[in-house]
Length: 381
Ligand SMILES: Cc1cc2nc3c(=O)[nH]c(=O)nc-3n(C[C@H](O)[C@H](O)[C@H](O)COP(=O)(O)OP(=O)(O)OC[C@H]3O[C@@H](n4cnc5c(N)ncnc54)[C@H](O)[C@@H]3O)c2cc1C
Image: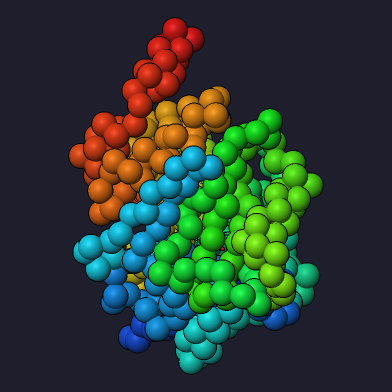
């Protein structure tokens, strides 16, 4: 008789997706399933800030660092601030708080083990188990959840949201902590559409990110854009950089490649977690983690991210193609969204909960010509 696999569930990658699903599994009693998470890092750092729209009570309420009830869209000529009236706010969680709380949940379970300093390499799925090579030897598992970033994810070709940011503290009071600068100073140049993302945590402290939607990110331009924004924000007064963060989030409606085995499940950014038209992934990862953990708890195999409904993929794809092919239109398109779409509808649209009628409302707010022209080109192709 063959030996039992080493663990029931092996999670490759202890980042947002891996820790989210493992922390939920750690909270379940009445199951004896064993779980192990492999993470190459030796220790966690405050390497990112997750933002999402939410109400007061949710799993991470205790870790929310700041909430904004107003968010701003602006160009050099015009600006528009949306104010939430229904209890929904834009919320931020610092990565170090998220890592600390999820790791603490995991450490309280004697069925779940987090192996830091451990890198997963080749995966070999068999009939009744999966063999995983690691830098510390081989492991076998009944199921594998693979949340490792896709190979070359940071410099892969394709349209993406690319950003570089710094959290700064200014000597003078420079920020309005009530309003998030969702898309500030939007403009377009020869490297495509750009804007500054500003999260003010207090009057003197903010995360400022130079952001581009582009297929060909020019890194040096991104960095010089950030330095320019920091100078502008501080308006000549002294400032101190407290930490930096950067990233690239793919913006594509093409489905993420899925593992060719019914024992291996891709999840997280490499498994298609990000909403194509916006790059938001945190809330989608939390919804996936809840569903995946429930499945495992009830004896079913894990699952990857569910595909988006066809109408949403179509709408996202059309929106992305217009922005990619006519980036000079993007500032006016986003300004129109801020100005003409009610906050609750826009939040549902941006945060993945939009229904068909929300999309219809967004479509009504946008200038029709570029979308009809793009539809016409697609039909003629
Ligand atoms: C700076 C930044 C800010 C972001 N802000 C937001 C935001 O505000 N809102 C939002 O919705 N989304 C945001 N995102 C997008 C998305 O939510 C995050 O990227 C999120 O961390 C994705 O989770 P993940 O688990 O897929 O990837 P990660 O959190 O990156 O986790 C992947 C893990 O795999 C590990 N790993 C790598 N190689 C191996 C290996 N060989 N074996 C085992 N493990 C391996 C890595 O060390 C890492 O811990 C942001 C992304 C970045 C980079």
